[in-house]
Amino acid sequence: MEEKNLNTVETATEPDLNEILKVRRAKLEELQKAGKNPFEKVRYDRTAYSADIKNDYAAYEGKTVGIAGRLISKRVMGKASFAVILDGKGTIQCYLSVNDLGDDYAAFKDYDIGDIVGITGFVFKTRTEEVSVHAKEIELLSKSLLPLPEKYHGLKDEDTRYRQREIDLIANPEVKETFIARSKIMKAIRNYLDNVGYLEVDTPVLQPLEIGSSARPFKTFHNALGIDMYLRIETELYLKRLIVGGFDKVYEVGRIFRNEGMDKSHNPEFTTVEMYQAYSDYHDMMDLIEDMYRTIAREVCGTDKITYQGVEIDMGKEWERLTMVEAVKKYAGVDYNDWKTDEEAREVAKKMNVEVEEGDEATKGHVLIAFFDAFVEEKLIQPTIIYDYPVENSPLAKRKPSNPAFTERFEYFIYAREMGNAFSELNDPIDQRERFVKQVQAKRAKGGNDAQVDEDFVTALEYGLPPTGGLGFGVDRLVMLLTDSSSIRDVILFPTMKPIKKQ
Image (cartoon, rainbow, N blue to C red; front, side):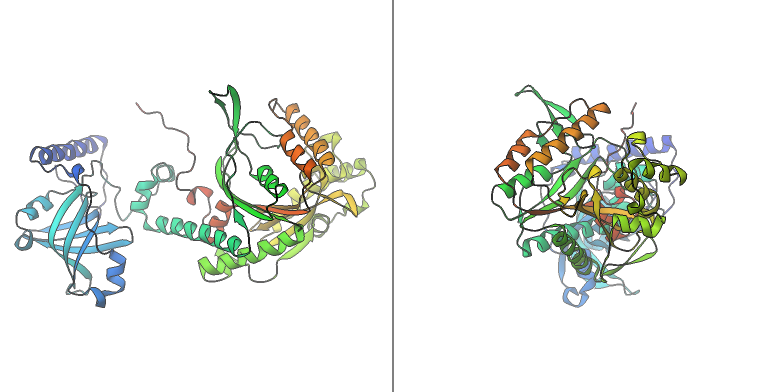
């Protein structure tokens, strides 16, 4: 049977698909019997890409080029045909005829949509002014044994798109642009930090203990050592040990793993950037991240005013900065400073139907955090820095000397989404150990029985950590923002998916 082109609507039933598979494999067998096995090809001398030819036609006109890519459509008209080739930079039309190709023209007519081909020919324009390649030679470089999705309707099913990203990239060219932008963003991040004196480092992904953080790790077993090990949930502790060791500015672009739920802004495997600077504090980190985001937006998007999900986000103007107490007062209408006791704070929460996870054990700090979650975060559309967090949810941040109930910590928000987290780092080993112990106890109370205090980190602090500012942010969320992508799965090439049971 003959297959339909990608420019027609394919509604094949399963028996039709099975027949297509049989036909394609039969064609492969015939080629192999004739000594023309396409899978034996090792290289092809490609001299030009589609976009380069189209964008600089004057330089290529009449010149012989070698192009290579995937056959995505063909229109056979007896002794002459047109075909479209998809390569790494786009598509280009090719003209093929029996007069130029001889016996190879008959072979071309038997090619399938999806086959990988190499074409040598000269560049010209058709009567309709379309830049094309007039083929003088054609070669089958790899056989496609499965049919591609229909061209104009594309691959729309999200589940299939994420599971088979390679097909998504073929069917939906705009997807490739997202990941080209991601690469540019990664490069811009590194360039920015390198230019302000940071050193990029690598720290262990596989770690020997589950720390007391609320995040749940993935657990594995090391056969040679005979111990449980854990995929890291952050890069923070090792990076701060490097500051103890004498590095002044370090950062890591790190893959992070958390054994938790998935939604539009969470994937179990994601990428962060964490950076630490000796002899600085969280105010220095505020200035750095604001300038970094503005610089990256201009470099990648050409402007610091971007549109995300229909809303203009202005990263060029000075970001608003509010303490958490100020933000809750502004958006919820309640003032932390009016609460004299923890019980009074809990009563205010109860009257305003604000759920506090800690219940009767909740402190004023816990209640403040609950009010922030309930009333504030959803209002933070333009870039906003929220700083001075309660000590209750900031186990690694330094207490404010003027008010020890709070820490020198900030988070910044864009489009009502937390984008990053920063501290004046806690460098008191005694205070740090006490907070770690409480964190471990809380985690074990919830079933995290493997949680332990990281004694190696506490020991490092005992040698002396200078005053240090630290900051971490999610790369995937930044890519979402700068590419106007609504889901984290749209900016991760192969997001985590539940396996499909196959018969």
